[in-house]
Image 1 (cartoon, helix red, strand yellow):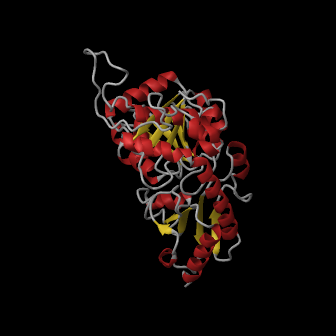
Image 2 (tube, one colour):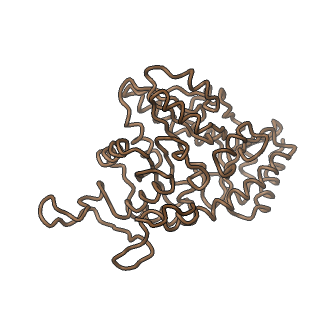
Image 3 (tube, rainbow, N blue to C red):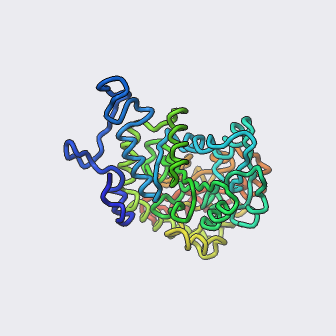
Length: 387
């Protein structure tokens, strides 16, 4: 195990978890590309018997994310949704969850179209208002599930207040930390029970893998999730585990550049005469700015905005040269998407409109390209989209 538990996050990113390989001196954990392991006699082995149950490369990743999030145990899955599925499988028929009212469309879809079939229900609430969360709690509620910032409207929820409310009511508290990662925000340190990541995004960082991670800080929860991971089998493969460890090593330097670029573009968009509305937690005008400042390092690198009515949003997308129109986020390249028809299409239009995911909303994942060139690309696309 790592000897760096008391070091700062930038050091832990590189040396945390299980560092290197003692047998050979390799500074990287090897890729154990194997499905099974030879046993000395039946039931006696060297710690591994079958790679669905445990694999040394995946184990190194799981130890790393647990350490980065200040948790006791980590679990790696084949996708962010596989991670969410495992967490939701902790609940049973009759249980209800309170969720943030603008969450990732896939999270809404799996709750609305899969888990409701098993009698596990949910209620969408504006979790930026703690009183609204408390008002929604009844005897059937077993957990509060939040994104902060939310996807795609970047609403900020007070993590510590949610953790305290959940503990007072005897509920589990769950935070999707995909947008910020442990480099910018560590919910378990604020009292949260479970942290989820779509590691496809910033943790991987290069748009070349799909993965999900879960971290807990409770032995009983860890045991239940270990059982679910093995029983349902949605595990991350060894090669992708290796790639994810490699991506995490550069998370700090990447996010510093992502955020620097995002802060510049947020100011540009805020002051642009053609921009009607902007959502970015790093701007002092953002309603969650002070809470975000209290619980996170900065405002991250995701921006959402709307152009004024005299613009054709499709012309805007077609006119971009550097920024790509694509699903996902958090890669080194800048990506833009139309949530209403892409990432959040699974959410009914009336609900999208109610929470503010309008047909004119644009979500921008700011990459690490030259910031001036990104600004010029946005400027020319905005001009080209004028009607």
